[in-house]
Amino acid sequence: MRIAGQNKYRSAVATVAAREAWYSELSTDSGGALGSNGLAIDHDTLYLKAAGGCSLQALDVARTGKVGLQALVLPSSTGRLVDWSTAAHDEHLVAAGDEHGVVEVWKNRVPHLTHSAHSTACASVQFHPTVADVLLTASNTGATGELKLWSIDASAGATIWQTVAASAIHSISIRGDGALIAASTSSGTCSIYDPRQPADSLVGTTAAFHAANRPTRVVWLGEKPYLLSTGLTKMRERSAALWDQ
Image (tube, rainbow, N blue to C red):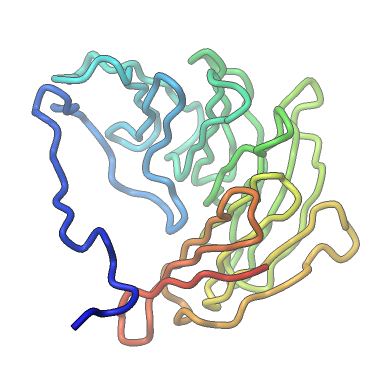
């Protein structure tokens, strides 16, 4: 009997790379927020949090093997880092937000900017996909969240757009063309914002498919009008949903 829609990858077996292609003897920190990326990568460098949580390790993609204390460290001048991101438009730019709401930016692996973006921990950081030197950051105060687009250029810290979310924000994502912003929240829903409408930027909210107060993530599928969200059910089963904008 043939089952319609059967996954063509059902018999696929993953191939693990040889040990020579691994990074080993890394000194890392596993702490992070719900929306933290855990690691970020550009064309030649992999960034992950170093032990202690107050700095990023910059690992050369072309040089794997035993790293140990030889890893280049990008120190933070403030507190423990929560989330970090690289820029698609600049292969030498990386930004990280910390527990005090401070965002630090490095360019060519040297400090470029330190800015107090929020009054509480900066839970999520993402570079704008189409506008150079613009960051989207998010933080939470109690049961509400804050989203902010701001500049890291000569007018460092200038706010371009900001809004308050009715629920705490777990993760953020900017559509590939930069027109819309999505945020997954503690209510189990995803909110969609149009930053070009400063007065009333909330343009849509998904149904509460995921259980409230459980970790959720959301991502735009490139420039397409589709959102992919993940979370948990009330019975702690993993759940995923594809949304049409």
